[in-house]
Amino acid sequence: VQLQASGGGLVQPGGSLRLSCTASGRPFRRSAFAWYRRAPGKGREPVATITNTGEKNYKDSLKGRFSISRDNAKNSVYLQMNNLSPDDTAVYYCVLLYEANDYWGQGTQVTVSS
Image 1 (cartoon, rainbow, N blue to C red):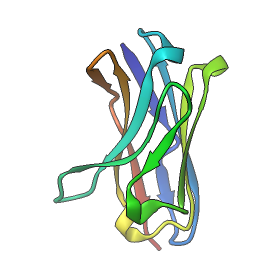
Image 2: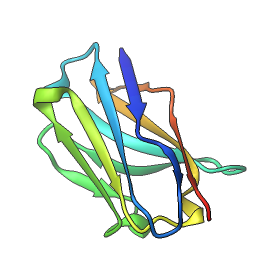
Image 3: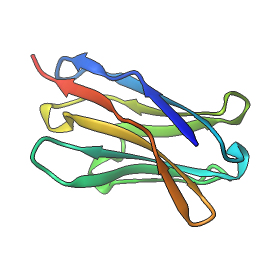
């Protein structure tokens, strides 16, 4: 399984970023996906999930600012992040969920700073 996340970087507070994740190695259309993050000095936490049918769930505190989506034709999952704050600084991981297994990508760094 390969998960390639991209789109991270340095952004000013209030800015936006769109993370992308391209997946291979498992049936994409039958897989669910999640984005997790790990902030400096903190544990890993779930950010958002999307099922194979497109049902979405979010960490409560991120609802309204973050949006997860998928494009089955491109084997890709996205995380749109708006109105970013320094608290969103973290490494963001794309996770593929298939048949009770989870597969993790390498992560992409998001830094929110002025």
